[in-house]
Image (cartoon, rainbow, N blue to C red):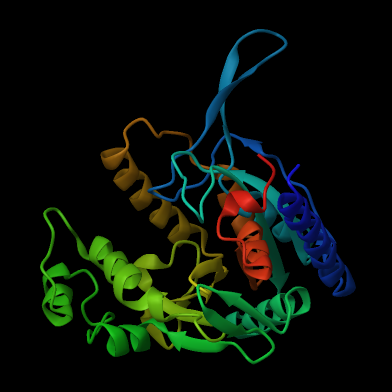
Length: 321
């Protein structure tokens, strides 16, 4: 093993140990949920790894490596009402870059009675407990010890795109006109939203201190509740630091009918785009939702956190491959 690789992996192990200690001190229960599942998730654009379970009595059934432990963990919370966390290995096919790897570690935690604001505070506490008071990335000095920045998505679009993102929901032409860009062939509102986010907003986030980008447009609610003060917004945030998207969090939706409706829409879109990506609806998850208490949950890319802590340029620098 190269000396630098050894140093980075040792630091990774230390951060992992400190992470477990953080949650243990706060009364969280560490859990392990199945990696091999019948339904790997419903995100439209994620590519999955599939295999077959061979039954001892004969025959076989299709299974998938999960893309997140989210569904299983929320079923656990629904059944026990306990705060839980997991450092889970997850798999996402067809991914690879300095920040992406097809097999990586996701830290997820779920806290009953927590709203989005309290989860942001806990996430800040967690990052500050594990990282130095300041880190360096791409020439930027990022102050970890200061309160993290909070920016609403509508504010970010107004400042960096000069567009009313909430007022244009579903209307790609209006968003393109306000942003001063041309629509690409076949580009819908969601595609343009993410293009503008990636090109015009994300480069400004987390440069001097970590930034929470909050209150996403309702079409990006996924598994989040909508804002009762403005139903155009989802109670969702992402955390950015030094050019890295570190985490994605929701104030969790527990309305079974609404969640099923969203899943069915996602499944139709995925079937149209990727007809080979098919699996059954996770009925066990939907059944468990009816008992889910008010809670918030977060998925944090642990490998990226280690990259930030060590100034490692590539995700493969901090994992053993």
